[in-house]
Length: 128
Image 1 (tube, rainbow, N blue to C red):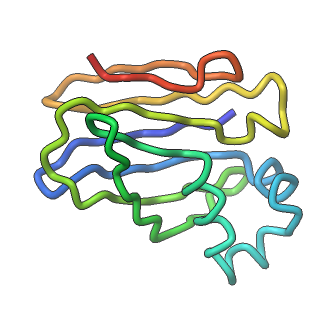
Image 2 (cartoon, rainbow, N blue to C red):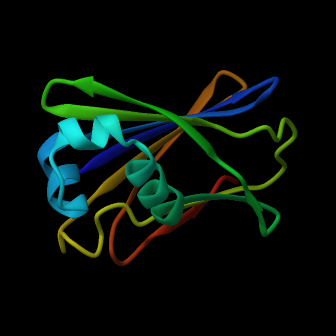
């Protein structure tokens, strides 16, 4: 399972993705100590498996931190696009590795929250 939080801010979108540490180690075939020392491997995986779009245009996510949270890992990123009209989220984190994978997405915009659950059958969500 992964839990992603997307927050609209004046400067762009803030993204936090929380995954289980052992799942991340298994998928990337590496232990967390090595991944922490070389976070680029983590960032590349998430760039390919967690994507944001605005009106069919890909939003570039700058992943900038991985934080050890005990049994979990928090991956932090931002976009520089401050005016997003029609946000679409594509989340295929761990879908290829775990057939029952669930990816929860929370989107905060204008003091409102929208939550959805994505899986192997439904990998995309567009904010109404």
